Amino acid sequence: MNKRIIAVFTAFAMVYGICCLRLYTLCVANPAAASNQSGGYTVEVQKIRGDILGCNGEKLVSRDYENIVVAKPTNEALSVLEKVLDSQSYSEAEKRMQSGNAVSVNIGRLEIAQTADAVMLRKYNRYSENQLARHIIGYLDGEGRGVSGIEKSFDSLLFTEKSLSATMKSDVYGRILSGKRIEIRNSSPEIASVMLTVDSRFQLVTENALDVNGVECGGAVVVEIATGAVRACASRPDFDTYNLADSLNDESSPLLNRTLGAYAVGSVFKVAVAAAALEGGINDFYYTCSGSCEVDGITFSCNDKTAHGELDIKKALECSCNTFFIELAKRTGAENILETASLLGFGQEIALAEGIVSKSGVLPTAQKLSSSGALANFSFGQGEFTATLLQLAQMMAAVADGGRYIQPYIIEKVTSADGTVLHTHEKPYPITALSEKTAARLTRMLTSVVENGNAQKARLKNGISAAGKTATAQTGTFKNGKEICNTWFAGFFPADNPQYAVVVLKEGGESGATDCAPVFRSIANKIADLKNFS
Image (cartoon, rainbow, N blue to C red; front, side, top):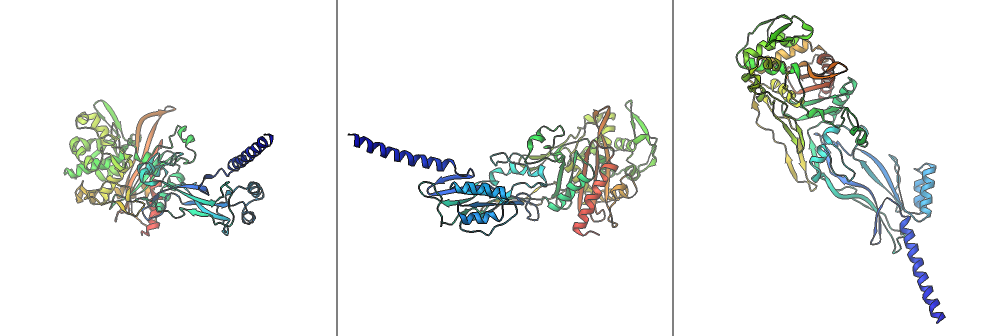
């Protein structure tokens, strides 16, 4: 009886010991391991997600990489790691291997000679330290799902269940087997892609121009005139994709995409008023500016109450005379101005992608403008009127393109993981917003604004012509007793063969001429270099 008890106890002890050994093996396993099933031990390096591309096929995400070494617990693998790790990292890897564990280590941009026991996998970081176009691309949550921007708009297409991983064979006890090659999975997977109209070269130029010229809050867009393609779209302040908590608590709202918001635009809108007047046959209107005028008991002034004297439309645009445009708007009529503004895209939102919408802004009704004071404010882009950077860009593009309006777009092509093209942008038939005669006349006037008027800081190098208009818009918001103004420059270049429209906004600026015209110049000069304009 005693012998039977001893035998049963011994057998139980052996089973218990085996179970404990198995439990220990699992507990000390490499934390990077995703699974240990069916004789395989898998280390997941990263989740795989579809691509977001620029218009030339260049990657806008997943451009930066780090090399990850996955190694079995063998002397051969240790000798490989010894060549790429510092002493402390090597010591830690050695201790883990001595316990029978595989290791995975990040070796940055270093590389190894791969063996059966040590392989190298290239891990692409979704966003780089100097990531371009953050506000349009957006960001992901902790589960790898899109939260904003293109990442959210196309999440169902870009998200995959695939992972870049390495699998090692193991025995029934979970011990990694030597002599068996490490299997790499999904090193070159088929993935979906979204191609944007954004040109990474133009985007870099635009972001740098904002930063160098001190635009801490604001933005800029570059639109191709012939197609409406948005070639650059930059908002400031920027945000750190890997440290969103700071941005959420920042009162300057870095996560806000200012290129899609509607703002008081001020004197840039005088271009639309001038267009409406010319379309209505008001060609030779002259007005003598005394520096201010009174409408409905309200005094409206030009900048610093400067008396500009006798002006025509061209001279009034050059010096941005408010009182001239108040009288011009009165003669043109609110309904005519509203019709022209609507044809130029004001008051209409622009859907760039699902969830990415440029606001409609506020285009006052004719009833609202029945008041002489309201029309006076509207004549130089003030009052309740607001607009977006894209709307102003397309106004300028329409002037530059003989009066033809084309709505901006940002999605060029969408391709599924199996290579099927799901969407390709088709150029819409343009809307005739202005006559060719009016557009040509405005182009000459806006060129003179840059050459001879208050926008001379927008003049380009090498004799390349440019056209445009400055603005300093009151917001009605005060800080430390001083009103915060939005400053602007909207223009196009080359003026004699227009290719690109550029709009720049600075919140809390001093004047469009000093804040934003230099940003335009910087962007346009760099693009001219890239495109070999002369």
